[in-house]
Length: 347
Image 1 (tube, helix red, strand yellow):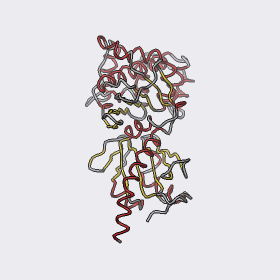
Image 2 (cartoon, rainbow, N blue to C red):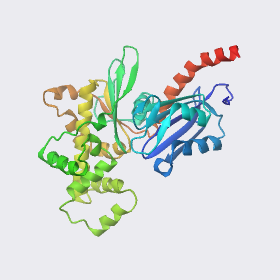
Image 3 (cartoon, one colour):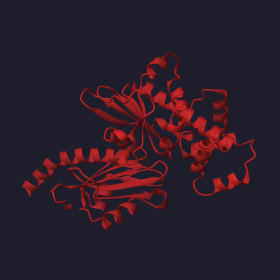
Image 4 (tube, rainbow, N blue to C red):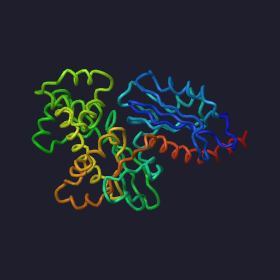
């Protein structure tokens, strides 16, 4: 049986599992600050359990009764495969191994999208004069990071229903001669399929740099900088600073294609309430290249006037996925309470 906090409510384990980082937190069911929280480098661990078990043991917080985990990858029959990690997560197995009565695996962009409805106003950085209009409208979320995630927030007449997609794996469509040449370059690397994720991700930014640097002489100082630490982050920094032309061109084209695909998503979902842009790449690149992003976002021919009315905003809160998982966990815990009381009466 799970321990409880002072209020008697069950504790909740919530997490956001990505290809780069895994964020975990323990919360009380009634709100307030987290009882315990931590961030882990995902690739440093062989499995999720290798992270979660020590986290629960070390925490002074009550052991959870419910866990909701956002996972970067498809989920089928309560089993998730993390797209950019050799991890397999199954709800029943996690419930048994972690000794948590109810475990729910949710697509990471679903919890991210849900979290957009629960972040502080200060964490919403508008890219347009229009702010998001949630009530009565569909909304959409796009997030370039280790991979490219997309999700929809559909208005059902009373509230938003968050649904996952795997739209990041849709075919990359070139819009210009340069992008057609880029497609050919990427097709040589990935002959099976060139998706938007091959461009709009950390490694995608690296590929864009390689594309533009093919005929360039790379100074030794820049070669050293790229070889030390996070190569893709270094490319972003060089590009934003205009310190090396291939890096600057890579950043600009990345932001343009990002804006174009965000606009595609807005059309597909008729997201008149707004499009949220999530992730480290969005926080670091998009606000500084706002005009490039928005020019590509609205450039949709006859539908340009429609997209000019769509609010677009960057979510700057790095814990947006955890906040979304917490909202789902609290709903789940509330739904589980009558069953738990009925089971207790029967026993």
